Image (cartoon, rainbow, N blue to C red):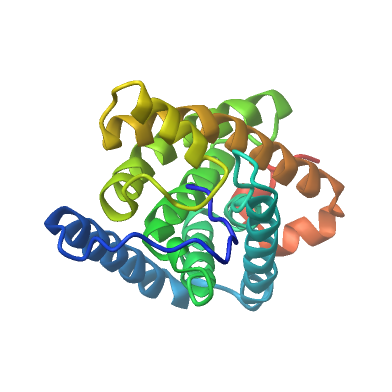
Length: 232
């Protein structure tokens, strides 16, 4: 997901007159809200207890990394955790809710809710395929997720924020723009640089957390069919 910084002097570019920006924002947010509403009733009590913790992890890590100006995000660790432990729908809801809540004090987060939803869906899907059972599949899952996230987030960054989100990744966008690339191309190239490293770290951190959890605790969050596909 696109990096979200905490620079208090950062001002979100005014692009309300841009038709592309309005269409992208409205469409992506509508999709995010519909997915969250559609799956919320399927969750168990344990899942409802886990999701707020995961949301807090996302926001705290995202704020911390953003304040350091690093060219990564680490704001999806909680999303991946829920996706792997509970399933893709719960992961999607966690990602979307985290960004919506985060946007209350960091408005840059809101448009990227749909990217966070996709990250949760992919994490849960990879776990269901058994990729978190073997540690060497985890980085591959992270890299695949990174490419998809970069492609999805680039139009949002380009059309809504003019490529500038106030994060440590803005330097890459500026460099690509200086080299003659369009805003969309610069945002895409930046994503293809930052996202692979970010998702590689995110998925590996989530994997290590899951491995450290007692098996009984993991079983509380996993559906019986998926429990055997988690690391023992």
